[in-house]
Figure (spheres, helix red, strand yellow):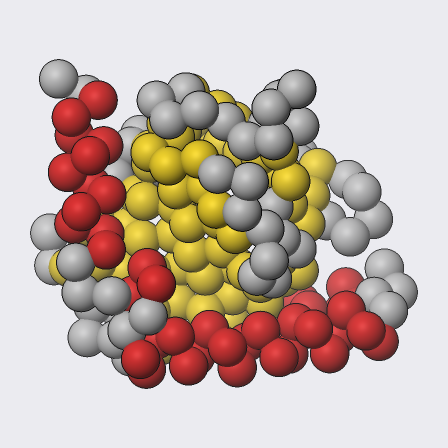
Length: 177
């Protein structure tokens, strides 16, 4: 078993909740970079299955950034009016040959093309924190990672760097020819 998927491999992405139940599955993403600590993937018009069985298809190309040491993942969605980012506060990813997997911890940050942002789902986070008994240490880690993400946004670091999404989108396009 490899510690990570190979470049060019088509993988699934599985999101879980803290209680171990599946939250969402993305059927197909192509790996653009795969190491033991970082996976960058891409997808476009991929089928997504929700926990209740409902399905939908993504509307635009997206570059997905997952890290084994950060408690968040970042999706850069490429739209006509610019790049929108959706940042999920989550556990670091794991790869187990079946799929890339992580635990979704409800809090999200939506970043607009002008780099303004909003923190989403604080009420859902508080409700689930109580219902699923998130340990205090997880609560602290997640709140610290919200601060880290906001810092990355301000500093244009990682996936927020001006050419990051464009660079990986070009690589994604090379696989689609």
